[in-house]
Each structure stands twice: as C-alpha cells, then as structure tokens.
View 1 (cartoon, one colour):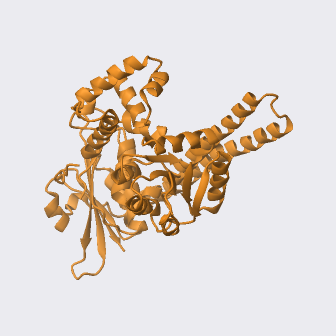
View 2: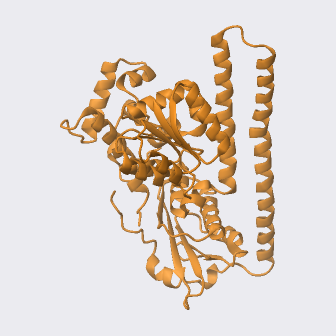
View 3: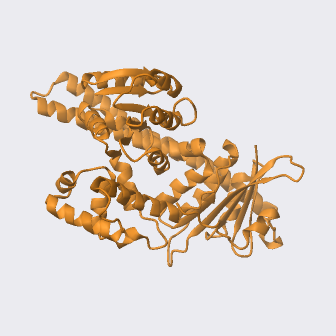
Length: 225
Length: 229
C-alpha cells in the first residue's frame, strides 16, 4: 500500500516509518508537519495518509491537514493517530468524513498485523475507531430524553458497539460467539428501532446507526454555541 | 445537531450581569476563613502526594517490571515462534496500561483537552465520565490556562464530592465570559446548579489566589467569578 506520514515527534515518526516498511508498505512521503505533507502530496496521491492529530500547524494540525488533503484527493484514506482517545476528536474527525477514515491510539498500532489491518480497512472504505473509545461511547449512554438508543436491547447495544468499531458481520459474530445470521437479525432490529430505512446501502446504514447513536448522546449533553 | 436553548438556572441572564451576593452567602470572615484556607492548602499537598504515589505505584512499577521481562526474553529466547509472539504481545499490552496510567495522572494535573480545546469540550468529556447526569453549556471562548484550569477543577471538585442518590436531577454548568465595565479585564463566570451549595467555600478557596470569588445564591446556585487574560 502507498502511504504518507506526518508526525512531529521524531522518535515515534522514525519508529512508525520502520514498522510501515517492515510491513511491506511504500512510504511515499514523510513529514514533521501538516503543511509539509500537503506540499509533498500535492502532485502524487497515496492510499492512506497517517496523521498525528496534535502537530503543526498548531494546535490540531492533523485535522486541518486532513481537510486540505481530502480537498486535493477526495478518495484519500485518513488514519488519525493520537496519544488520547477522546470523543471530542472523534466527532471532529467524523465531520471531515465517514468513509475511509480511522482514529487510533498511537501505541495500539504497534504491530505489523494491527497496522496493516487498520490501513487495509481504511483503504477499503471502512471507519476504524479505537475499540476502547467505541466501547466507552456505547456503554455510557447519557441521554436524559430517553433516546432512540435506549430502545435497544443489551445484545443490540453489544452489536452497535462492535459496529462502532467498524467490524463486519462476521467479525461481530466471532466476537459475540453467535452466527452471522443472528448478527444480521440484530442489525435489522437496530436499523428498525433507529428508523433507518432500507433504501440506503448496508454500509451507509451501518455508519448512520453509529452516528445516530453518537449524535443522540452529544445532543443530550450540550448546546453548542 | 440540534442546538438546545441555554439552561436558565434561576434566571441566569440577570445574574450574569451582576451576580447577587446575599449577605448570608458571603464567605465567612475571621478564623473560620483561615481554618478553611489552611484545609484547602493542606488538601493541595495531599493531592500532590497522591499523584506522586500514583506515578510510583503505577507507571514506574510497571516499567521496572517490563525491564525485567525484556531482560528475561533476552536471556532465554522462547523456543517457538508462537511463544515469542505471545511474549511480545504481552509486553505491548503492558505498555498500553503504562500509558493509560500516565494519561490518568496527566489528566489530574492538567487535562490535555482543556489545553487544546477549552472548557466546553473538556467539561463535556468529564461529564461523560461522571455517574451523574451533567449538562454543560459553554461556548468556544478561551480564558487562559489559569482561569480555565481553576474553573475545570472547581467543577470536578463539585461533581466528585457529590453522593449520587435519589432522582438523578441533572447538574447544570454554565460558562460565560464577561467584559469589564471600562473594557479593562475579562471575567470568567461559572454557574453550577444542582450540587451541594457547601462546595462554594472550597471553590472560593481554590480561585481566591487568582482574585476570584465563589458565592451561593438562594436557589443553591454557585456563582464563580475568575478574572482572566
């Protein structure tokens, strides 16, 4: 896979560069900041750009850089790496896009297998969310208005949580020790309860289900002004 | 996303203009005041000692143990590939735990999200971790690291000490900026409703050195004012 990397911490950047090469990926561009990476990628596309969230241009150069890169190359996959898994950043990331995008903790991409799996899923168009964050979001519904999500059964919440991690039906079935058929049934129930209609594509509805959940949670917490 | 109207704890608009200071709610004067200030100072040191212990018993200990495990691995290479893989994976898992503990301590010193994104996002993240239902009404305005830090930990203090019992009435937190009358200096105004009003004195001690005040109104509304950059 052709990848590009921007990270201001030299130690982590060099480490990740070595790991990417060891995994057999072609690192087309490597930079210490967002502006530099945008310049390097102006003329040549890559499959996935790996961006540190907190880097120049400060304070969260990774997000600004991602927007500029997507404007240049709409098909580009984006993997955000951070020292923190925060729902605040997840929401901002999902505002950039809900296709071919990922958000993971830096220390969690420390093996060839995990790194390649994450990159492949992003390149295939999936959303990849740090499992710990997905779990936290789904397990702590804080909706005072008895949200749509509270209509879900415990099992359906489990399934939604795994969907939030970006897993496939087979992946969810494996995690929950049930058949893919049973997962399909749960997902159909979730779609029904969240009012997601059958005319949208399956992948699209999955993302909407997760976003419905995240939004219902966020709206209940705050009024943004 | 829908935008909800701002919660109005006891007519916050008028309060924001000129927060009332009922005579009964003034911080007590004299020896009570001193005793409380002393307690607050003592609590600060206890907190620092607690953080040091957390570093020592948590991250430092785990890293020491990791050094030993790496030493073992070097000394006795596992005979088969699978065992080697498992050993490395276990070390990486342990490193994740070390980082999590360091993140916890960092969050207690000064939350990174507060620094990067301000009071609104930081308080919302804290509210999401709280067992009580908390509504945060805060804009994107920034107030400088001192006032924001003081306001953040004031809210956390109120929430942490709160026993959660009975009907879960949401705690309301409002953050506003206020310009001085002559355009000289700004004030961060923080309103907290739905927690025990007795927290006002602790909060007052926490913001006093910044020239701030915390008072309780009749409805139990805590009004905190902190001069800021």
